Length: 119
Image 1 (tube, rainbow, N blue to C red):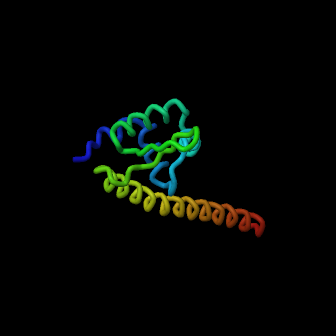
Image 2 (image 1 turned 90 degrees about the vertical axis):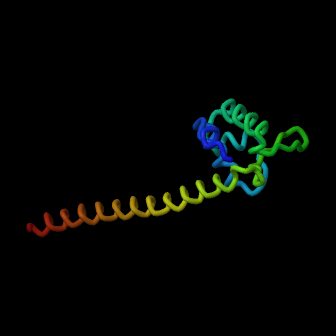
Image 3 (image 1 turned 90 degrees about the horizontal axis):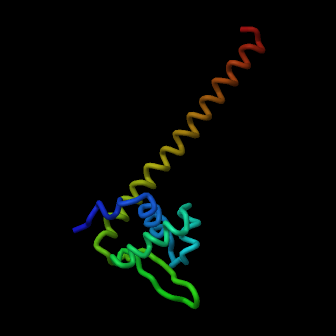
């Protein structure tokens, strides 16, 4: 059974999971921190926890430890569904914002045109 409290235990944890979910290949620690826009120490702490829980896989390559989401972990289907749902909801929200901005521009332009015509 998936422990949802563990998945949502911290902002660093969910951002790190999201970052790893969208990567096709394993990443070094610093890349995960940059992509997740989190402090290096926070990402390192949650990655170590998730490696111990086997949610995240770790492999060594030269002097680097590379991290990837463990797609065989029991929580992976839940995470995949969560991040896909999140992505589907973000796309319409972006379009809604663009549509609102366009409508605001049109309304402002219409007011200027009416003022220029003296209406």
